[in-house]
Image (cartoon, protein in one colour):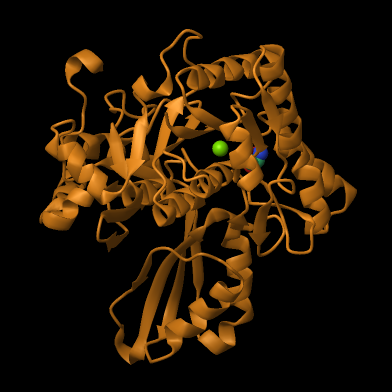
Length: 426
Ligand code: ASP
Ligand code: MG
């Protein structure tokens, strides 16, 4: 017997019929002898609808009241799933964020889980009851309802799994796993049997939006084994133990998976692309200590995330150009902030471009292998793709290119690293 947390996303919860399917999947898991807690999202589109109501009610809405409104979507689906399970003869009940409670810290609309006190929940599971928990919501130290940022149900599920010491957290979604790259771009993309937390974090943060990035960080910190799998399976499919999703695991577990020969060791695990960044160039910045601090401190204070940074070689007259990227949604704000500080920073022109893309190759295998970056640069240059900036980490190499060349670059790299599926799978 295992204790399993199952999480269902908005597409899986959209309507009575789909909730019935979810209930069937949940019951099969229980019938296989497991204790089950289920975390649910609001119906697809519901949270957007609720956010719009808040905007219409008050352009500068109070985040505490926003949380009251947007948390309601998950309350509806949690109750409906509990009812559906009961209609099938199962013992089930809902547990709202304040009832568990899921204690959160930090601000409204972007709360973080602090502690979950779950003795009553555990007792209920041990009595064979299915627990249904609305994702996304928690309770603040002041006793007010909070929400954890868009996509936060993934984080709720992982947090509940950690608190329950669950054997696994199964995330059911509208894709059936994590792929070597976006299958809409590369038909020969392959589903990965397993990825490490670190790899998943890099893939998620550069555009492979299967899970909320924060949930992966939490899983890594708490050592929660996460599985991503599809909820669009046959009603009579086998329980999740035998379903081929993608496991997100620790480095140690990954070693075991390799040793048992379940997976071939590759230098590069996956390729991600991200079109949501924009480039800013500041020309003729004084080339002296403190200059870049003047640029990036105000951006940091405004919570604008700067990603790639290049400081070009100095020109004569002690000046240099500084290029960096910010999320496209923050571009206007960043530009205004920098214009405001033109005197202090001392740049000449500010040039922006949102027609860029970031392509990243990710893999723990590159820790112990040279030449991964060189392969990337060669493959791109052979297709005439110009690289505008480069950044690297221990398990990732990213390049900035023209947005129009995104699909070509992803395809070329997928082939270059030997990731293409063999013909029969294509
Ligand atoms: N319903 C929330 C959202 O759409 C949380 C979630 O589904 O993960 O962002
Ligand atoms: Mg989601």
